[in-house]
Length: 305
Image 1 (cartoon, helix red, strand yellow):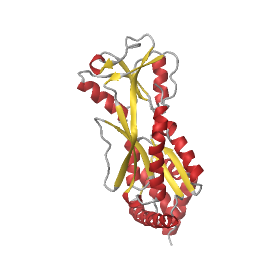
Image 2: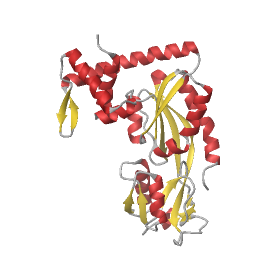
Image 3: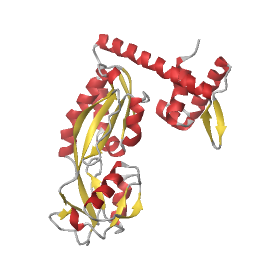
Image 4: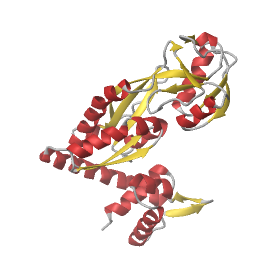
């Protein structure tokens, strides 16, 4: 009899690509995941992982077994959903993936509210960028995702995934004190040529929006510094190294030396909750989506202006 937890570990490695990433997603240590797969290899008398440089790769037999594991986990999810529906209250484990500024600026109050009102619900949060998390929820690696998109880059909705809008996050132009835009009531996009930009790396939604928007306004962006986290971007602006476009969610108070200037028209990113269609009836999903929408006006009312 194959052990479901060991199959879950193999499935996680197939989804995330490494033992370390699979362990982080499951809430285990890498050694625990490796032990689960080693036991599965003994049970099946099959080599499942092979060394590939500093990492590992799945054998053909492992990929076939991981596909079977995905089908079994989908059946388990369906059974758990039915049981939760019969109980009528959110319960069990709910894995959530959220992008960095939502994990910092929105999720703490949402998770605390859920824990207070639904003690039988065990939520587990992981910080993951939207370009990865949407695929993870579609493939069953997480239960619910908080993601975002921009007006010129709509969020793709894979087959079998449902989504609900949470709210809209406004973005501002941040410039060093003494910059030519500091103190302005607004700046038009046509005025942004010749600036030195601080931005997230290529492949991130914010980076793609900035480059496409500036090119549409006739400017080739000169991106001189790149960083993953918004606080790092703000610190670089404070040092006078360039300007940046930063959303308000999770940004926190601006340090001395940084001035917020409205960009006209104001850039807006939209936040969504996404989950698999098969889990749509699960009370934990519907209650978490409702709580996200309920907390959003409170968060946006206290966003830094």
